[in-house]
Length: 334
Image (cartoon, rainbow, N blue to C red):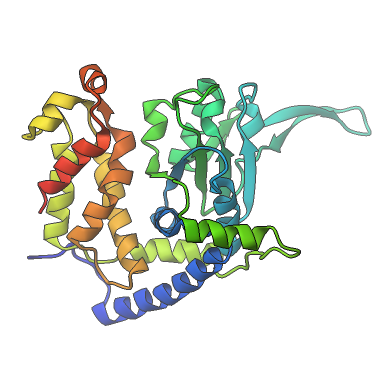
């Protein structure tokens, strides 16, 4: 099989990937001292950042989602801001606003006060507790890395990532995220309860006289370099074909799979394939490999696809789950 072409010398590329792997090992170790028993969640968060994307963490309160984002900011050396989303939060509370100021000579002028979105790592805590209008204020920032305020286009710092936490939709006082915004998240990661040993370690580590503090293991510039390196990694034609087969097969109008045609109202667009291509490369790097495999595609299919597809009304009524449909899709790629 052929590979997606790269202009990089394979030997040099391998050395760069190995160096990145050593750096990421330090990052994972640093995070592991603070976050217990959520290795898959941590890895998927790192995959998202290495891919240059945004992450949506879903789970009930109290599972350490906020702590994970704070730890990532410190360990990766990123300028971090946090916004607690509430029903009365306004778009200006995120983007910033203009204020009228008067100088010593009585001259008045508007000055723009930057909002918390002007950072490298924005934590949108409980994003689905805010109104749809406020949720939508993040759309342009997430996609274009810039915001329009007062007739001006202002760029955001680089790198720029949104890591949002979300409570399950069934909980009181939540608003479903619009489909257009959900599509902006590279991965949707479900955060579950820790196992017994992890919860025991967490209990002992967080209730003593001194609590472990995260230490920086990477810089923003190194993260940008890693994102650039990722895009130069070779991808085998077999993996490319599997990604296309998976994403295109999840569209009811195009799919040859009965479970998709019968149970899905709509499926993922091209952004899902782009996300899966980048994410598989990032997972390969975390495992110390030069190029992704079909195992990477299968492992990342659910977090890439589940927020980009929707069950039909009849499927929901019959108790069908998205995980079952995605499992059927994964079976088609071997």
